[in-house]
Length: 131
Image (cartoon, rainbow, N blue to C red; front, top):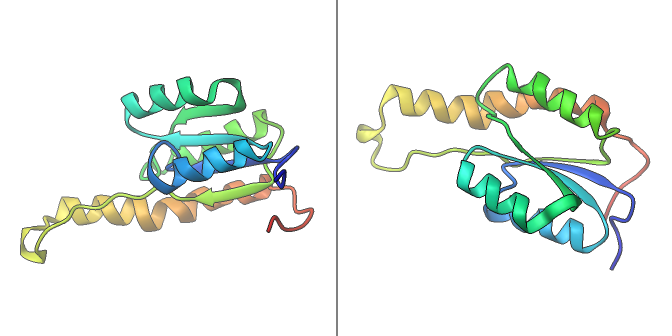
């Protein structure tokens, strides 16, 4: 299949799990990806795996300033055709063991982050749908 030929897709949280799998699929189908992550070892491993078929960048969805950095990255790539806000963070355990700081970090990453990163949508080329 070649659904992504000539397409650029940004995937936050793209250095592990389903984001990484999605990035692999898009590249396999002819696209280019911008993948973000936080873990330096995974960032480096992803850079080695994708080579010049991807831009791999450190970006913290919980950091309000990071959305501006993401916009700059997208602009330097010439825009994007798809946006997948996949970055997430969780502290697991019984509710009584979850501290306020853990909860705040989850909300900053999983709720506020995508809202702020959504400003990147202004760089999406709306030419249709990828199915």
